Image (cartoon, rainbow, N blue to C red; front, side):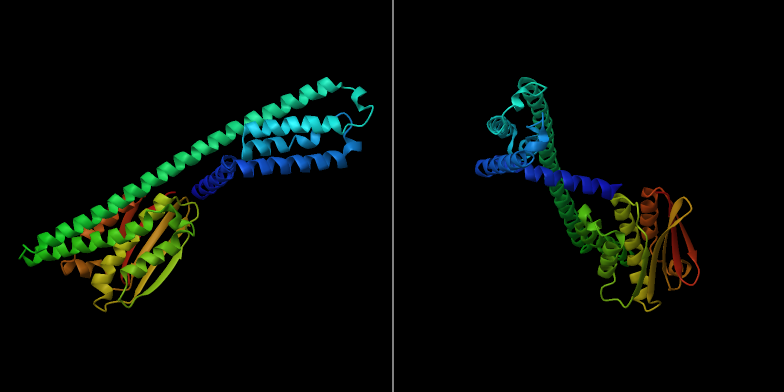
Length: 325
């Protein structure tokens, strides 16, 4: 559904962009002339088959003219079409039923309705385009401020670290700095919804390659992201990256393992996200006073997905996140 809405938004933006032609008077009048000549050519070509509807070839050009050139120029096209049709009418057709006046009234009424309808739609599209542009500008500004806040928090922690002498406190501050820096890097990638145009796997792989930079790791990704929203994919990337940070520090950097596997698949009416490594497992890491902060973060992210997080130690550490959607 999210991708469908994105495609609809792109279509609306494209139509709105085309509608801006009306702001260029020479181009707009050139289009009006082209539409008139094309319609007139059809009128002359099909003259013997039109019977009591000599103005029919001009009718499709009116909504196109209203959309691209504005309603005033479309009205001019309608007036030109009436004059051209009258001038090119064959002798005797003026007496066909319905009368000339009736045909003219019907054409003007239908043409005027089409012009008014398309003009209203064009105005609505322009307002939507302006609102979308404003929202995009506000969103970019918001994300820029969030990115600056990450930098401020990291700098504040770095400054506070200078006055800390306790080793445990230093380790906690270092972990916090590393996570803030990681979140800042991820944020710059994830704040743009277009990042997920190719699905979840490319952006997830990019994030993990950044986290595992300088570490010898074999990554295996088997991710099925159909029907996932941008919000769900963002949360999954953050959750997997948090697990990768823990594995990079406590498994791969210490040469206790060399494989990191992520899979996401549908299972019944829910989805199952599995994150595993071939290290010693969480039990060993906890006995070495490994931080529990990472697990708390991952449980919070799993809750954002509306799911649950379970841990099992079978040939390494494995995290299971089950959620619906």
